[in-house]
Image (cartoon, rainbow, N blue to C red):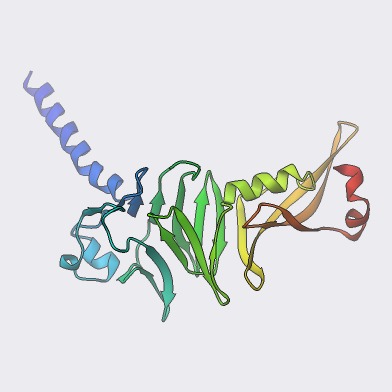
Length: 235
């Protein structure tokens, strides 16, 4: 009986220890109600964030009462900032956006020198700072030409490329978000057009599709010269 009690207490202590680390998977969560929840207060945050611990607190900011709940992720002088906080050394996700209305779940983070938007296993990388407005339920990128609203998220961009039938396989679930022209954002989706030859052989053609981040339309397709001419025969 004593052994069982000790085991139960030990197991409970393990669960208690693990839960805080799971709760801090991302620094900020935007929940289904559009509320911004800051989850940064632990003994290690002072080191990882590079700021004094007493300057951060766990809090909920209701979007209907806060003056400005926008979240900005940017790079300055070689450092990454989440609003005014230095998060350069943070190893986990920065912002998690929960599913809300027509907006699907997405996670914002950093990989190397680029910012990332991850959705359903699809990772979009961009050089541009990201601004999230929970109150308006909007996500924007700050490009040299100004702020551009992102209405098409990574999953929809890939689905659009696959629907075009110029691409039917995505070897790597990584795409890129760039400014094609002034004020025009587009995803670069690197994939393959796999041709099934008599059911015994696969022939892979590398194809790149550019997808509008505003409408989801295919802006262009790049591949071998012959594929550009005769590609319609294989769609």
